[in-house]
Amino acid sequence: MRAWCVTRPGPMATGPLQLSELPRPEPGPGEVLVRVLACGVCRTDLHVAEGDLDVHRPSVVPGHEVVGEVVSAGSRFAVGERVGIAWLRHTCGECRYCRRGAENLCPRSRYTGWDADGGYADYTVAPEAYAYRLPIGYSDAELAPLLCAGIIGYRVLERAELPEGGRLGIYGFGASAHLAAQVALARGATVHVLTRSPAARELALSLGAASAGAADAVPTEPLDAAILFAPVGDLVLPALTALDRGGTLSIAGIHLSDIPALNYQRHLFQERQLRSVTANTRADGADFMAFAGRHRLRVTTTPYSLDQADRALSDLAGDRVNGAAVLVP
Image (cartoon, rainbow, N blue to C red; front, side, top):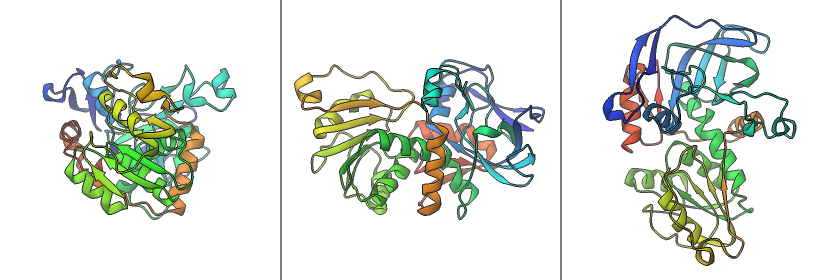
């Protein structure tokens, strides 16, 4: 089968990925084999390819927004059923984090496309217990970004503690942000988007954002909550400054450049909060899939063939993707 492997992590211009022919994987106990129908291209894949994240599996096949057709069934899914494979693929179930319902913090957690081969391939395997049933009414390409961009956007919105009918600022407007914005809008929020991409600003306004400005602009009103999707630490300070008293800034990324020095009085005083997000629980994923089933989300995608995976990641690195890039084998 065809598969892209991260053979030498580094900037995309150095060619860190290689298209290879690999044997079709065989499912182990409790695993399901799927034929990949679509795989989203996530910024975390870019961090794996470029070496921002430490190598966990040499020559790993990236990709953790996988929509697949079951080829070899286990106990949960039938042959031919469409399933989703996401970032989180294993937790221990025994540590204090797992026992209290915070499996996303499990120190023995493992991840698709980092610890195990993912979906930049014709076939992949995944533990059945961590695969998702998918909402109907969406194409394969539309479903793929829901499996990380959507789930993480949903969790980071929860972490932002946006009050009902509140004012939300979104910094960066890519795959995850354009889905989280729709969840917030469906809940009655006023959304202000700040991003350097003119195309992304147009998309934000078309989805119902009240305003869309440059990444370093000042929102048109104080914010009850803000989410930082762009992996740019310099934006933490203006986002905190834009918060009203008691507001929360939630950071979505697995990787962030350094944050400049904070001024306590200007950035944190008056009970402003700064919070991070680490992966997600399976409950987050199930809740978001149920939400997507009740509310028809507009999923903006840019399709690429599997043979163009390196180009898709390069375009993502250069902010040339509108919405979510998706590989369609």
